[in-house]
Length: 316
Image (tube, rainbow, N blue to C red; front, side, top):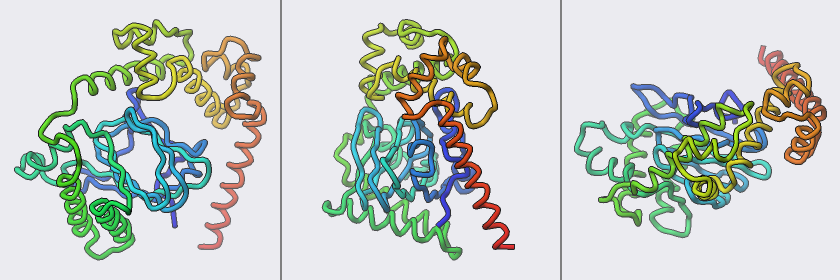
C-alpha cells in the first residue's frame, strides 16, 4: 500500500494551520494512508485545519494530544477531530493510520437546513474530539462505516457518491449519540484560551533565532507569565521555554539534513548562542550528536533514493 502524503512532515503556517489543501472546492474530501514511522521522529506535529478529520488505527498504538486531552488509540480504534482544533499524533514505532479529512460542506451545503440543524451544532459545540471503540454499539457502527469509507477509496466505481453517503451516516450517528450540549456553542473561554496559545506558538515559530523570554512570549497573548505557563501545560503539556527549545532543535535538525551549513552557523541561526550548549541540548533531545544525526539522515535519504531508482527501473 502506498502511503498518502508526499512529505514526511506536516506543513503549517506560523499559526500552525496546515497549508496542504485537502481535496478541492468541487470535492472537499481527501483520503490518506499513513504510517507514523514514515514521519520525522514518528510524529505528526502540532497543527489544525478547518476540515474535520476521521482516523482509524490499522496497526500499532497512536498517542494523541488534542486540545487539552492526552490519550492512546489502540489497533482497531477510531477518532474524530473537530474543525480548528490543535492536535498532534505520535508513536513509538510503526503505526498505520488510514484517515480522511473533509470540509464540513462535504456533509451538507453551508446554506442548507441540514448544515444548520445537524452540522453546525457539532462544529460549534464544546467537542474537541471523539474516540470510537468496538465495545460501544453506536461507536462500533461508526467504525464499520469508517472502514467501508477507507475500503471504497481503492475503487473507481461510484467512489465519490458512496463516500458522501457514508460520511452522512457517520455524522448522523455522531449527532444522535454524542454526549455534548449540541444546542450550545463551543465555550468562549475555551476558544479564547486556545487562540492565546496559538498566538504564543506563532510568535515562537517566527522568532526562533531571537533571544526571546517567557515574558516576551506571554506578552503576545496579553497574559501574565503564570497564565502563559498554565495555558501551555493545559494544551501542549509542556512549558513555553521547553516548547521554544524543542522548536529550535527541530529546525536545527531540518537544517542539518537540508543544508551544508556548519554546526556553529546552525546553532546561531536557531537561537543557541553557544555551540557547546547547542550540541549538548541536541544530544539530550535526539540521543545523537548533530554530526551523527546529519550522517545518519543522509544515509537514510540515500537509501530512499536508491529504492526509488530501483522501483523505477523495475517498472520500466
